[in-house]
Figure 1: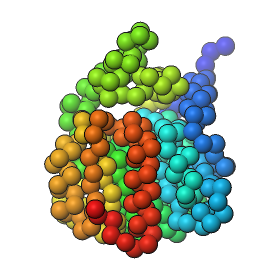
Figure 2: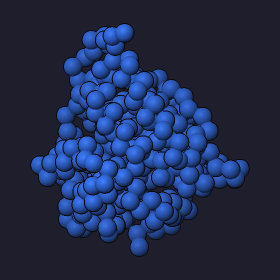
Figure 3: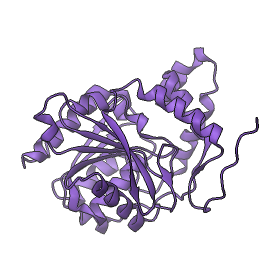
Figure 4: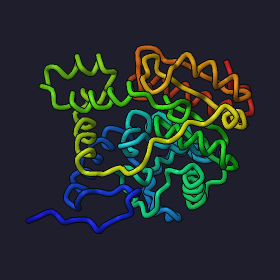
Length: 311
């Protein structure tokens, strides 16, 4: 039978190319979710921009369930399944919510664009409000890092702290990053025997995790992202942020210049902490999951207690 054709959507709203490809992508996502902790529950939160799909992970310890929750915001072209190396460790110490960002190929359903900074902040605030969360630790990776930075600048009232994993929003995205993205995508088609070597050369764990490789390849085919690259925050905008902030960068990142931003961000944001993780590029939370999980939890624990978060 022919695949169904989705109804026409706004030109700046993401969409699946068909129902069949959407279901194929969801099946690939579920295989990646199975690599991490099982979600306690999931729900859709209605916002002005569409329905935001959210997964919650609960600690076993009842006392830990009362701690300030952590909200995870994934990178572009992915969904919250990307947090599979992190959900078990993070949710052992506090409740964790993982959001599928509208406009990316997850289970959220986008009706209006959110790529403009003011709209993005409104969407995320409405999502947190819909979950009944008055205070959260907010953590974002890559494009999700831009969303988190934007929230810290434009709508910080609900934020206890922000953590940024090799984020967008600090400098203009250069051609080297897009070359890496396309090279990584082409490498997913390489013979299995070559993938470990390519994964090491490209700093791309997607190539050696079969479930993740399938999810990424399926997402590229199944979903059409319709948004421009976000503009970075200015020095003045960064300098206006007053929340505890932890910046984690990969030594071999191609999205930002690590040494430049590790110096710049703490200089502009009072009390900000920046750290460069060696032997990794754009995915420190995947390449060095145990180390990164512990560092992020220690930072949030210090912020909860009002202790200095800078080493």
